[in-house]
Length: 125
Image 1 (cartoon, rainbow, N blue to C red):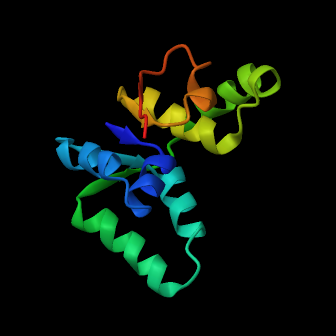
Image 2 (image 1 turned 30 degrees about the horizontal axis):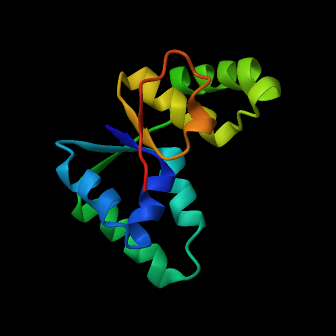
């Protein structure tokens, strides 16, 4: 199961339902794009360290940006960018889940529902 950035944000805000979802996952993955988004939102070194420690302590595997993921993300932006507003970051996250054959957990259904070959689990806070 790959977790979208918004799920991490829900956990940071103290949402027990999001934390429980992560806790119950047998394996925890995130795209390198999500990891970068989380780090880029840190306001200081302490928050930066907290994010890195959280990823490590809860044994998340960060999935790298591969050539195939990059190519698929490009296709998603070409196919869905104009019609649905697919942005590069979401395209990389969706492509990571699709290329790895994993379900993407997100609360942002509107960002991903256009991707036909993506298996989604919609989180509702």
